[in-house]
Amino acid sequence: MKSLTELYKIGSGPSSSHTMGPEKAARIFKSENEDADQFKALIYGSLAKTGKGHMTDKAIIRALSPVRAEIQFVPQADFVLPHPNTMDFFAYKEGRQTTSMRVLSIGGGDIVIEGREEMQAPDVYPENTFAEISTICKANHIRLSDYVEQCEGKQIWDFLSGIWEAMKRSINEGLSATGILEGGLNVERKAQYLYHQRHIDESPETRENRIVSAYAFAVNEQNAAAGTIVTAPTCGASGVVPAALRYMQQKKHVPDEQVLRALAVGGLIGNLVKQNASISGAQCGCQAEVGTACSMASAALAEMSGMRIDQIEYAAEVAMEHHLGLTCDPINGLVQIPCIERNAVGAMRAINALSLANFLSDTRKISFDLVVQTMYETGLDMNSSYRETSEGGLAKLYKIDS
Image (tube, rainbow, N blue to C red):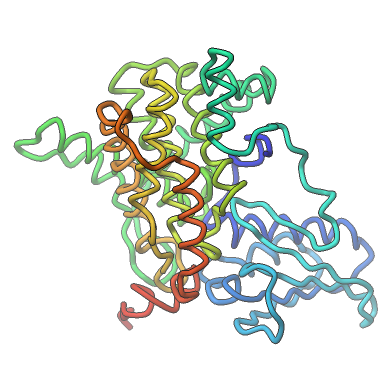
């Protein structure tokens, strides 16, 4: 299993698979073809169907600049796609094609270049399931965060410190911004309103929901505006983990060092989903994105609270279980509706899962590994209209005002 540095990435929104991945691929292709005087990119499948809303074309053109680049969206390819997010790049010199490269954007900003699998980052975790990791930790009387340090080295804490600072910065920037998000839906930024608009008879529970939601809205509004966020595990699900952790840190006066250990455990959960299933909405729907983010946040909160390994597993499992079947149906291909609100709900659900784990972990029947497998099979069974193509669900039925 890969390092957490391959999961948590600081980058620009609005989409890790549709913006960050294609931009990364384009930069690699440009660096390998410095003498080219023209580029072309064919964008297939989910990338083509929601590419405009996700700014895929702008990301590729930006990466290939100043060389002229032609972008063609091909929603229906005449071959079987190896992944819903597939791209072909072509380089030209004086009108003649010199080379090409096929790339799969597999989620979380990661890419696979066909024929170059050896370029993938090396594994740093010998175990690949929660059951295996749990067995190792219990046998050696260590916590999951200690296991992360053993596999990654002490330098992981400096890395996670930078990730946490970036997460907090995205919250603060989002809370400071107002106005209408670009894209044509006329979605108004609501984070600042949620943060300051106290109810007249506000209970502690209502305040918790309001503040957690404000933090999640802040991050995902930044993401929708192509601002800087952290993939956790993706851009579209980037608000869940920072919102839940930031709120609970403030509520319980938790030091940053303890939050970093929580991020390590949350990252471990995200890595397991990425290894054994998918974090790509184009492959498995939003259950793979917000569902995974909710599991990560729940496990992180459980670690922050000092819970046992079995309780951490229960928190992560119940969070994913109750996102099973969640579709990815962004209206107009934009990471706005229902994505922004969905992150807020996911962050609140993570706190709910934490509470359940505190009481019910000893009675659980479903393992985290089993629910991950279930999510993956559910995603593969899901009609493609509900997997980030904007052809079904809200994206199909909502009529944009002209």
